[in-house]
Image (cartoon, rainbow, N blue to C red; front, side):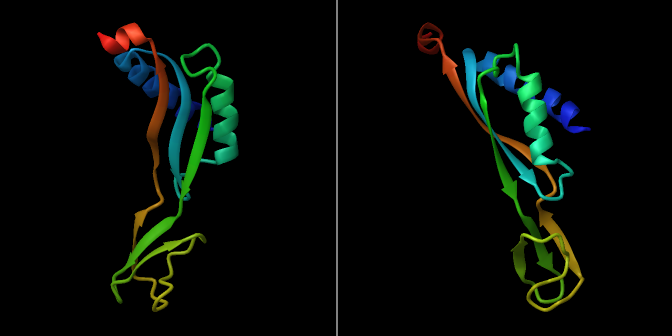
Length: 121
């Protein structure tokens, strides 16, 4: 299950950003997951809840935003977002499409708690 290695990298980034910001805790981690990213959201959540223990994110909530498939039709020029995993253009029925989104996973945002003394200094 590659979600474990994805979460380990994610938590590494979370800890790096928390340290750079002087945060003592991360309370929310928001990620965007493309439907073609190969990430299974329920497995990612299990891995996150397993590996966050003992880290700066141990009490953090994981919020997953699922990004639909986005494509551009090379024949009619239409741009579309689709829930189903199909590269067929819904406008003209062409298979001559290019995928422009929904393939990646991104760390979108973090909510952190910082010590006031460090935040002021």
